[in-house]
Image 1 (tube, one colour):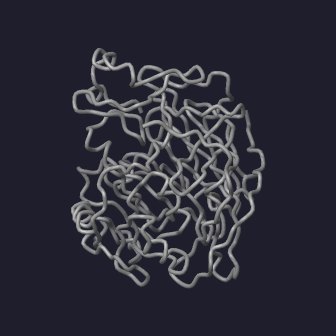
Image 2 (cartoon, one colour):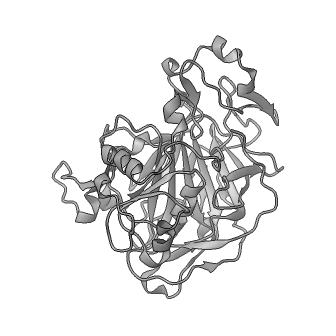
Image 3 (cartoon, one colour):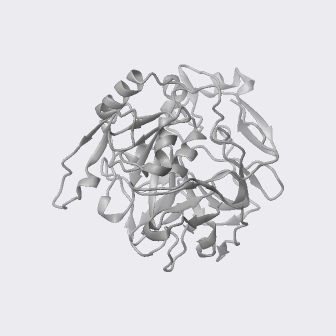
Length: 409
């Protein structure tokens, strides 16, 4: 499925964040240009990829764009198809079905998360208290029993989920800002039954006794169960496969033609909130944002994730989280009035500054998104679309007003 090239863009409603409680009407925010970033300086398994001779039979699978060979129209080869979220070859039914976008807490008392290493895309953004929250997109989840823990909704996460035609999954919500959004037909959602939810799907959720000696608060024991999720999708009548409004997530380099960006700056250690204390939601702020960072390993072309001073791992398998691409999407943000609860608002539509990290390089440019259903598009400084390498992607929604802390080396 080809992407649309976005032209003139307009800034629309800033999405307002809130914990379960009161809210006010959403408001429009003005676009602000971000500060410059500070600089100090998975390939799919062979068994999952069709034979090269089979691929050559259909020349429509790739084409050249700005010197890069990219995946264009998806073709089915031996029952497999290239994912819209990762570019990797997967079973056709997995690639065609809509992903689930699951809200996952990322503050230290909630760790480790279960199943998160299976996510194709992970979004990370600040919430109140200056700690980040994750939204993980899963398309390949058939071998999982559950995912979690699952936490409450914030409306700018909902709007980001719309860009991928995902089915949004949450346990709790910022009622005044999210209630009507989840109640509308703008987003298909699988939500636990709490105040403000009008179409609950309790068959999809349950609490779990977490292993180990660590005592977990109740809010970190709720999980999304895959069997229940599938039953809820069917009961609620949601379309299980991508709809016509879906635009693919990214443009990926074709098999055997990785995007190397040899002329761009190297970036092998990446800090979304910098390496010193700040209150951006990514550094050690009021409630310890975790000071996350990524390290690039040239031997496998992956970025390894760290936070709270140690590798971030999946409870399911003990594996450290890795991705092929990292994006800093810089968004104007502000503390919503009244400021009593420190609720945040962010522009996730329109345009702004962006940094894409792939193959150990950094490409500076812009992001652009014209509508709720519109794809997030990323362009270099010359206006060419940035080509992503096949594999998982981690997107950090950076609060523009704290962008001075961003750093790579």
